[in-house]
Length: 432
Image (tube, rainbow, N blue to C red):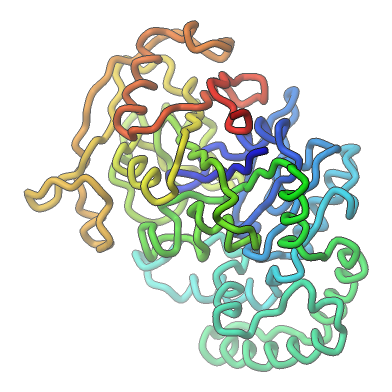
């Protein structure tokens, strides 16, 4: 038996969906524990692409059980749309295949209005680059003890009372501060009554279900969203998401005891990307950056925005290993680097004459960082067909080995293409 956490080590978009899909073969339960539909996990199976924003990636395996933990903020309309799309693909989502924590908080229409309106009011240079999905305002209500939980959909009087209070409060802010139109209590109430009819059978106690599974010797995979540098506490604040993306939140966001976690796998893209605003020390503004963007198909799965691209940031990778307690790495998109004559990895930063080996907390200092690079030889061969480490070009193996040395962490998985089968599995975290 093993319980494994998957987290992103950079600014998200590292390819977590594919790795979760790969490891789901060996798991019995797959759990989302934070974020919302601002996350997008893309899978390619037998040439067909699937993008999930809320449902755990393991849903593609009919015999597996997926769970949405209390740390997730849930937009019921988005979830139902995903369920409908899967049903149309021949993968019906039933309560036997999915449980939603009664303690997960609901994204309401006023959260989306607040998200969009607040971002629009910010001056250029202050914008966060929010996806506009209502994630931040929903987490804000949770912390301010004004949130509405999924389980409260099942208590019509409680839901009605909490919704009325929230609509009255939020409409004052929407109209008088943000200068946008109010939301309608009647419209929201009617819409969420429809959602309740469809989602009620799925709402349950995820913590209890996971405890029963653990005691029965089942294997559990925790699926993180976004990346370590987007963590609300440990990322490049304020250009971060609204939840804790690090591995410690797998326990908090699902109600699972930390003593029962066996392995943490960090997903590390072979280069670095970032979507939206915020500092990015190794960002490339030349033809190499454009090549990585084109060959890697670097567009956000959730927003469709073009991703900024740069060389691999070894400082960010080391920080992620420390913050998450990572036992093994899964390197993704190694194939995108094929054809580059020379590669670079940032091993430290320089700022004001000072050499830094970790990301500083002051965002203005982060914006001034200059990466200190180490150069490595590139390789010309295409590698998507490779299934064994020894068959990789020597220079590709040297690149992987250098990543292990910089992070002081072994590589468990190498992804050499987008498809499920285009993978080199060096060590299975579910096999002791």
